[in-house]
Length: 148
Image 1: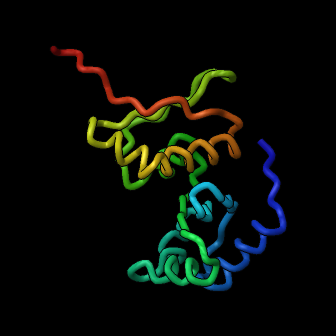
Image 2 (image 1 turned 30 degrees about the vertical axis):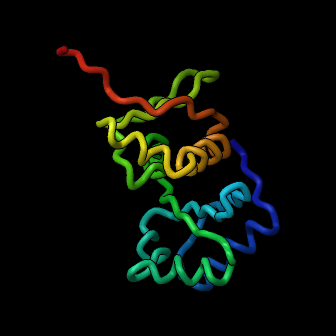
């Protein structure tokens, strides 16, 4: 899937590099939730976040928006699971070409965390999965109880 990064996104990626020395692969501007979502190079999350979240706070002050970061992973299931952190994701199922992605969480309590406040976390995942893989995120499910 080919992604295009506009001027504004490039500027935000460069701002992140200057302020934190971390590398971002991509940047998504989400006007609905007034945030900027960075896709960070594996291993650079510590640099990007900073001690006690100082770098995120600094970026938020400079850019005037909330900052969120997702660590990239070559394994697409792991990358999707990273989008839902801090929620625990037990599995990610990519269906056939025209089928959506299903995210499975271990417990019912993790569903709310995976959805996020006002649906912000699942919306972040929907946008990133569409941007990177051209697929939809269908549902957040919990494993079915086999022994009732």
